Amino acid sequence: MLRTNNLLKDMAIALIVISSSLFASSSISSQNETQQAIAALGNGNYQFCSKPKPQKFDGAGVCFNFTKIGDRVDGYYAYPHSDDLICLRGKVRGNNVTGEALAVSWAGREWTDIPKTEFKWDEEGHLSLNHYQIILSSKGNDRSDLNKWILFRKATLDVEGFYQYSQPLMNSPSQLCQW
Image 1 (cartoon, rainbow, N blue to C red):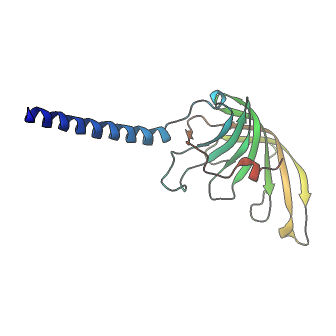
Image 2 (image 1 turned 120 degrees about the horizontal axis):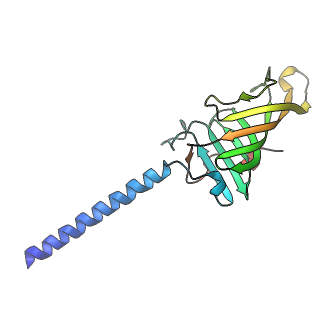
Image 3 (image 1 turned 120 degrees about the vertical axis):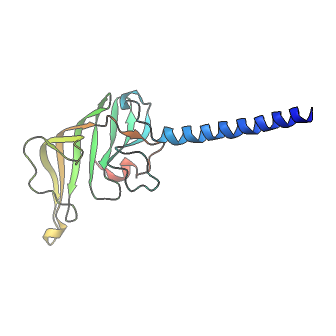
């Protein structure tokens, strides 16, 4: 009888250890799984990155941080911890966003020689931009004070294969994108 009780106790402990390790591994892997289609998400705030969530936020690749309402998104596409950022808003279809983009050219991140034909903004080739116009320009006393707001009337972002983070880690789009 004593051996049976010890055996049951040992089995219960083993079951708890196995189930807790399965729970922990499923929590870790769920942070690194590719996302469902953006179009299928409910209204809310999201962040998708080209690489799985790293231990430190460096190395996340390029990220799309956005707010979704219905079939519309408003957000930005950026490399974390850099000045490489472009605001984006538009309509969602599957994992594609089609709409317009807004960039700011300033002394620290100047846009020069903008292509007159469609071009890829990012190294990975997920964001295409075309049909730009400078919609606002402000100048101070010297060239370093020159700021230009550049509107791209045609922007297409494809986040197929990106990783959905459990919660946004970057600043809110409303803090960075003033349309």
